[in-house]
Each structure stands twice: as C-alpha cells, then as structure tokens.
Image (tube, helix red, strand yellow):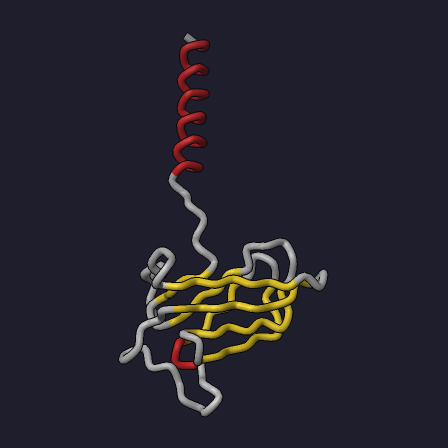
Amino acid sequence: MLKVLLRRVLCALLVLVVVGGCGREEAPPIRLRGAWLVVENQSRLEWRDVSVVVNGYYKGVAPRVAPGGRLEAPLSGFVTGFGQRFNPAREKVSRVEIRATEASGTPVALDWDGNTGRPLVDDGQGR
C-alpha cells in the first residue's frame, strides 16, 4: 500500500514538473503593453547607453538596463529630432531598433520589423 501511494505521489510530481515547464514560452524581448513599449534585456550582461528608435523617426534613450531588466516607456515619450511625439492613437508601431553596448564593450543590436517579422506581441496588460 505504501509503495502504491509513493508511486502516485512521484507520478503526480513528475506531471506537475513537466506540465509547469511546457506551457511557458519566453516572452519576446520587444513587445507592447497597451500604449507602452517594453524592451527586455534577456542577456546576462548590463546594457549601457541604450537607444530605442520607433518607426525610424521616434527616439528614446536610457543610460542602462540591468541583466534580466526591462525598459518600459510610453510610446508618446518617443520624440523625433524636431520634437514631434509618437501618437499611438494615429500611428502604429511598424519597426523598433535597439542599440546599446554590453558592459563588456560588445555592441547590442535588437530589431523588430512588422513587415518581415512576427506581429509585435501585446501582453494585454495595458496601462
């Protein structure tokens, strides 16, 4: 009786481990959260002098993003060189370019293009 109970407990634990790990898919490093852009540093090194360009015109910067950290910014905070702000009510995000330097000095380049890539994920947690 004890062996049967022990076997059932072990099987249940195995099922929980397998099912718990299978359903999780790593979120893409560039995604939307309502009218906010989320950029996640999925590396093990800090990013420095981070530059984010939306649609080739609108730019935002951050001094650094920690390993595993996120840069979250409202789309309306991205500005052109002439001071025009991105208007999420009138314009959709079609391209995102991230440039930075890792703490080791290695350049970082992440790009997302709506014409050639998968749709930009909106994680549904709008602000």
